[in-house]
Each structure stands twice: as structure tokens, then as C-alpha cells.
Image (tube, rainbow, N blue to C red):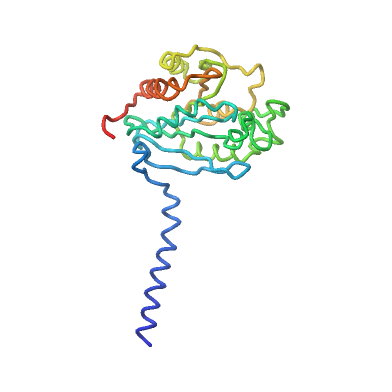
Length: 254
């Protein structure tokens, strides 16, 4: 009887150890897979209105300059996410601590709409200079009302990157009216996009870049490609150009 009780105690202890270890593993983030050697960490930073995961992938070298790339904030602007997916799915990256978020608005992407599943323009839903807007730029019932917005805010507050680059379509240009106009000009040259001032026609209220630039020491800027950039430009040219201007590079090996 004593042996049986002892054996049961050992089994229970092992099970308890398994249950205790599981949450820590999940919190730490998934490691890179052989199919994606560039990835050093992946996080589900939140979920959309419809419950779709919003994921951020960490590439490069932790401890280097931390930069975040965000795409598909508007679901009807799907092409630039290929730049971020190409960086994620390619060879190992060196010289930068890079986070990529290819699909910020998964519900909008699934529906082919600018706004999220509640009809809110996520790029008008941030707290800084929020204004009650209707129609195409519907800003929501209040600042940060949407789960997607809150997820990105929490993530950027934790990561505190030096730069955030937000990819959009179809205005074809790079906003140089930002905290780092010199970097914006270099970026425009590297990506072969014209320099411009993106004032949203007077409707720039509650945008992600405005909120970030107001709240953080780092800088955020907007990159706009055209309506239909070629697949070659999105998957070959732009990723290489972007790494170059960020001072990063791919390894020659796998």
C-alpha cells in the first residue's frame, strides 16, 4: 500500500510540473521553425473583433536597433504585406532587431474592406487627437475602442522601438513631415518612392503614427505604395531595399 501511494505521489508531482511549465512556454513565444530560419520569436499580440489572431514576428538580432514594420491596417490595401512576409520567410537577418506585423486588420483583409468588422477605420481610432469621424474614416465610438487598436498600443508600449514604419496604399509616396525627415528622405530614395506630405486631406485624426510620435521618443512614418505594385517589387525589390536602408542584411547561408 505504501508503494502504491508513493507511486501515485510521483505521478501527481510529474503532472503538476507539466501543468506549471506550460504557461511559461506559451508566454515566452514560439521559437523559429526550420521553414522560417529568420524568425527568432512569434507573438500573438491580440485578436480582432471576429477573434482572428494578430501576430508579430521577431527577426534579426535582439539587442540591435529595434524597428517595427506594420502592414494591412486597412483590409483593402493588401499588397504591402508581401514585403513583410518575404522578410519573415527568407534567410536569417543580421544588423537589426526587427518585428514585422504583416496583417494588422485580419477581419478587414478577409472582407476586402478598409475598416474592421465593426466598420471602424483603425487608423483613426488611436487616442492622440482623436475626433468623431463618420463615413469612410469612421473613427469608432471613442478612442481605442477597437481590440485591434488596443493590441497594437500594448505591443508598441512594451517593445518601445526606435522606429515604426507603417505600410499603406495607394498614395505612392513617403511622408517626410515627420520627426526624422532625413531618414524619411533616405527611405524614399532607397524604395524609389516620391517624397510627399500626407495630410489626409485634413482628416488626420487619431492615426497610429501621430499617436506614436506624440507618446514615444522614437519616430513613426507612413510609406504609401501605389494601388497595384508588382509582385516582383513587393517580394524581391522592396525587401532588399528596405534592409539596405535599415543597415541590415541577409546571411548567405540558409
